[in-house]
Length: 415
Image (cartoon, rainbow, N blue to C red):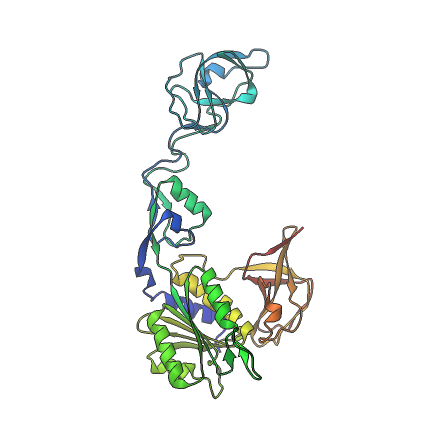
């Protein structure tokens, strides 16, 4: 069995040799959310585009207002009103001011804004009641971004903030990595779909739905291939189709050491190179990782539903993020938290216990899910957003102690 960190390193190194990053496509800005940039972005525009006012008030020449005190205000002639979106038409001269609104262009000759709270208007005159700082409330052209310089690097995921930046820069078409295609299949004669009447000895296949949902949440494209019976030829045919049609394959079941566990043998027959067969982790010890000549990456994960999802969160999702083209931030996120409950493990394998991660007064706390922590108990996995890590060699972390938590969703907030 490989240690968890060694297995993670092997998986990440395999992705370096895959060809997905050669597959790029153009998308419009309104279809770019969630996509990964495949080329750095620059703009021909400065930002701000021109000097503009950060506040409602009056554009002035600093020399005219620098020596004001409460006993000696200065009165200026208002020669223009400049709403946002309209170019100024007048160049300010000594003793003049322009009424200006937030976001409006600064008129020529002005260099400072006096906010309206520090003024008193009388007809076409304005009394300045206190001295501003030089260039106060002026947003200068190119002070946020200079045209031609790097704006966004390749390998980042585009969210709302990045989309806003691109819109501002008038970048309406982007080069992104294509979304990875992930084939998903469940193996086992005992499995049935949720819409099939349940018979004694049968098990409803939840893995197909859980993994397809998780893959879709990651931004990749799930290809659900359904349930494949424990018959070697049918399984081999299904796996071959999956390898040919996808960048990554996820199969559940058939990777242990039982009489009906055929996956590793079939992968070898199909020309796969097997890099991992098991990992010193609980749940999820049986883990097969293989690669093929067409660069497909294969994960054979356990069939028990908790083991399947924990294996996905710990090993598959980080690999899928890197495969998607993310340059950074694809590794699992761990935070330190205080556990509210005792955490128990066997001590021989790195153990992950599921539950809820809370942020309480700026500090993380972890609540262990109730009920049995069995790899077959899917019920108490609901609402999990964190996995508490009990390291190899430890059998008990008592309540109130600090523990490492792997985040699988956003923490809950408690005030």
